Length: 408
Image (tube, rainbow, N blue to C red):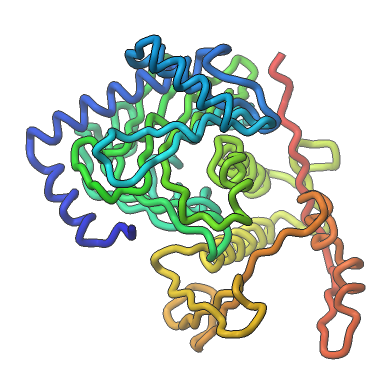
């Protein structure tokens, strides 16, 4: 189901009533309490896996809801049968009431990272839709504020509450997007400690055809004495993945597409960019950030260009409602999609029409090896050493070293 603008308008009007405002306030407050508990709890609520931690659904139900012994036995047997042996993700347990027409399955993960930023900056980029859409452009294809229910002054995010329409995407036109209406709430919990939580509004505005619902998800940001911020990110959702192609099942179920580690990875890269832009002098090798042959005056321009290129790249890859993909009617091109885009009024592009063609394939190599191959100008030129191919010349290098200061 595509979350069209008519649905956005309906929710926008509905949240304006005093009754619904109070319901949203209560819902977001309860969601923040749940998020904090999920961020602080350890085993048995969370299980270790190769990409962080995944939720133990049975322990979650015990902690946040009632469950009888018979139901627990059924859930445990189902979980043991269907869980991925590597990831232990309890995603095959129905998460919707019996009367729902569409079955949703639970996905939940947690990841922790230490970043050299102030927690207030993390809160700001999550509450400002321009920053949010830019930083998480590989996941978020649309983010629109439908209502602001907080009474705080602009720029003060303590107690801020927004109602939003969100569209999440994965980097392939073959993967359907995930869409929902949600409330986003931020609050300062103590000096140097902030929490930001998302929670879907489908419980207040039911839709029998909903295919995605966001449970208490977000982050807890705590500033440490050495100036580093500890960020605990929790992703907890319910999704209908029946339309996900078989070739992407492992990508989605493993959490690589929408998991907590993916979200935090975007924050890490944002800190790397800010480290370059805000540096007062050219750092040296061994510093947290350094680059070669690019002097300070051109630093911001180069990074802004790179950011715009990546943002456009992600936008062109997704199955967003803004993209009108069409299948290519050729034998062997079942996984190829194409669309025509106009370059008029588009930042950084000359007027004209562009053809975008995209596909997805699996290759027998690790992601790191593929990245290194594409990143190395010499290997790319060897691959392109054929008639009619273009060659790449490298004039300079902007290098980034991610070395977070010690938390000890």
